[in-house]
Image 1 (cartoon, helix red, strand yellow):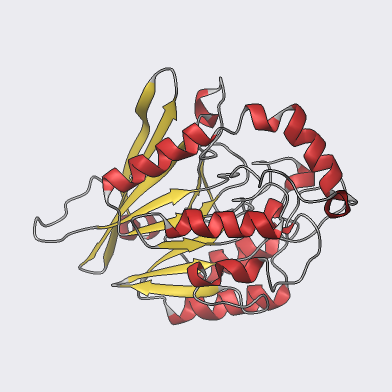
Image 2: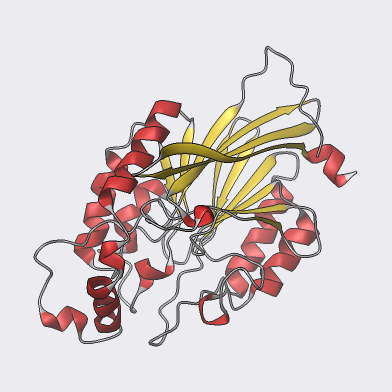
Length: 304
């Protein structure tokens, strides 16, 4: 790691990374016909366990802390819903719309619980995905010298599975975007981490090797993911590119690395060098806020 030496006149672009908000589902829930599939298992898990641990008070605290930090952009790496119901997509759209800072979103596995038309579901969030259609990922949002690239790893899976896939077409488009933006600071958003071992196999990114190989070949500054509900810092396999996980924004946990929170990422690009400052903010109802990690590095020195 290289200590930052940023000229005082250079202002950073501040990104807020959060994930796995799992907003409360509509009440009352829609009829039984909406749950005559894999959603029935998820509903049982929600009522027996998850509703007691994913708390709106925590996600509200995370959102308030992000608002107080005044970031330039909020990056949400998926799983805003629990069952992927159309009413949940609408609730999440209202939640996104109420945030003080512009947001970008990629879907998670809960947002693709079962196969469903893009219209009325994923399309509800198109405003926060560069108006991207289902077959148009990845999208690329450019701000100053930073390119935010959003991948869609969410696929419908059999019961007891929560894996993801990027697929050949997205991977090819990712390679092209990374090549086109090679002179920019490139930040990739994805729900499932492109590395083995961060989640169990049944929750993994099935083509993680292919995705990691493309990122290794064309480069990136950061890869941000959700899904694991853990505050982790690893690397894309075969590279020194940071692979950054974030806790669920709504999870109450006794394990410190899983307690609700968000990542503050400040980026400055100057003299061809991308300087990055990462802080992870975590919160519990009992103890309040703490900064659980603070790391800084220079991309140029890491790649040299």
